[in-house]
Length: 235
Image (cartoon, rainbow, N blue to C red):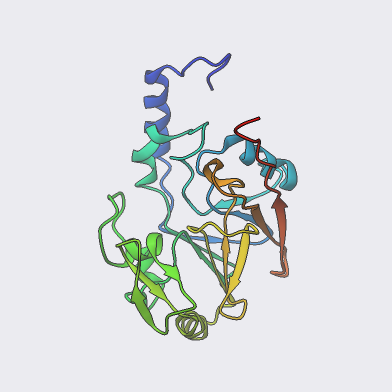
């Protein structure tokens, strides 16, 4: 780790990347509770440390991060690790009941073996299952599948969440990918939850950040990082 504000030696970073690439995990992680789930961090490193202060520093506690680790915050740690991101898992299943991903559901997803068999490492395509798992969004204004204002993937309605959970005997879809005011937000009669863990996102929003804790009985609770008061730009 760099010390005294000095940049890390690029050769050291290359060595770290190469070592990490050797530790590839399956596309679909199969995890057990208790576990703590975090949404987007966006390089807000000090807020990441605050989350660890709430939940316990690893390995005292187990964490699942749902993506968007970098590319926004002032302490934007990790752009150089893009090669590693292309090898990371794309979804996680907690005790066969809670399915987690960054974006959301896909019209192409009919069974979990499809996730397990995705080709990795790879760049994210413009369409298809992998794209949707990372880019789709829930929408209360949609029944079934709809167009996404992002210009990529789809939106999906509450009916698709209920249908998916019933078909796969699951209780909850957990995802990130969108700023929500309170740090977490339920959808589809509490069958889906969005978690966003970067308070005061980009310094432009007054949102809180949140972390979801899942205990051994799969009860979910939330720890909140309150947004800081904005400093006036002019006196």
